[in-house]
Length: 161
Image (cartoon, rainbow, N blue to C red; front, side):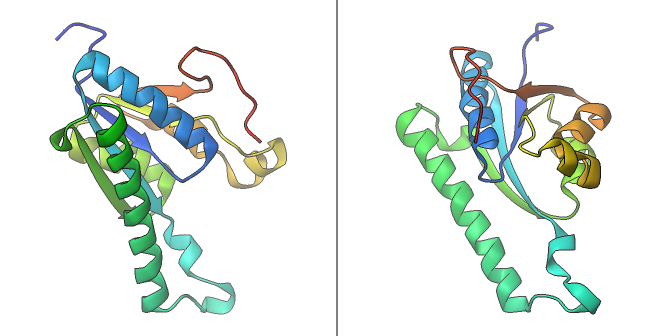
């Protein structure tokens, strides 16, 4: 393996335009490197607990996880249909937990990813201070290379609204 060749690329997806941009670029990098793509979405367990300890029902959590699985299946199918990938080139994963920890540590260690391609944060400055950016956390703590995607395939920056 050459020093610039990647074999397993992790792309966290949350449905945001930033994540879609990262996936578009990750597909190109994967094709260039003949690499495997792991597409991951994380269901943040903190979202399931409401005020005063109330939370979502099991049925609601099941539906949210089914929706996430369906979203990733559609993303994968589009890559298979339009980008020349084979089924074994892409795996989809839905995980529960803290997105920062799952993306930066747990998942790459379990799946031996050597590159994480993640969208630049969509949070404004105040939201970053209050909740912190997943992207910033991953960039600081990941055990592998992290590429923060801000541009399209032509390396043109487009402000995502």
